[in-house]
Length: 431
Image (cartoon, rainbow, N blue to C red):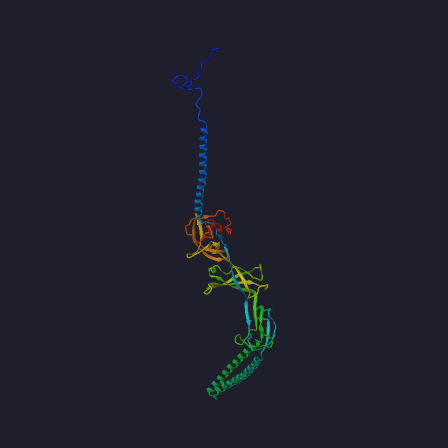
């Protein structure tokens, strides 16, 4: 067996002072120190974790800052609710108070003196034209009539004697038995006696007519609404002083209703318009009437036009003197619009509303018509296409940028609480 040479490297200092140089070994690569790779990985992980922590802390802050800036910018722009004006009725209706009056109304007085003998109709009685209402005893007038007739007889006798005398003088004149002066005197006396007879006849007719007034008749068809006399009462003729109204009669088949139309509607109030009458004692019922005439003049004290509306009352349900509300239908001469009262702005410049155009507020002056309580009628200043703000801020100025609330209902009428919530979102209530 052959021996293999010993290839071990001699140790230093084994023989002599000279040490052989170490021989490089190429059998395996050089090895790194244990644990150096794990340290780098850990360091990288630590850096990543620290960077993640830093990023997680900074990014939310940046986002919050951006959101705050956006919110601040949005809150600086007022959020408003808008509606569109409602078109008014082309045939507007105004409601005015009215007093119902009888179509014919007359107090009845006596035309002769005496005592009431009898009355035939009491209050509430329906009478016809010429119907007897009462009898009056007139003893004084009767005596005066007898005296007047006696005086007429005397005057007629004197007239006959004067005529005979005048005829005789005419015959004697032809024979020159009397002077011409006597003939003229006879004719003059005859003419005077004729005039006396005519005067006596007129006096008799006057007293006969006065005596005929002892019977009181109804002047027209109607209802007796008052009887202010009784049997045996002293009656004085005339309508003033001691004279007293005996009866009061009213014709109620047609009633007159007088109303005062405001000046702004005076041009539309023309004869022929229809009107409905409503009364508290007839809930839910309407009585048809018609405008028949106007005063054609504006009253300076009230600035109104006096208008008469006639209504048929054949059934007698409507009573003269009662109060009624007249619903007068007038044709609309100019287009009108309806807005809630919470859209109005009252300033020194006059009445205004705020509209939104291209995201900016515009102040529009308007003129009002009728007031319906929660709504008003606008007669000028609108075209109907505007977006009108509800509850506009008091500090609103022309051209200010605004934004329209996105959650408002599209019914034209916003919820009552919504404008307040919009104000709270925009930084609090208006100042």
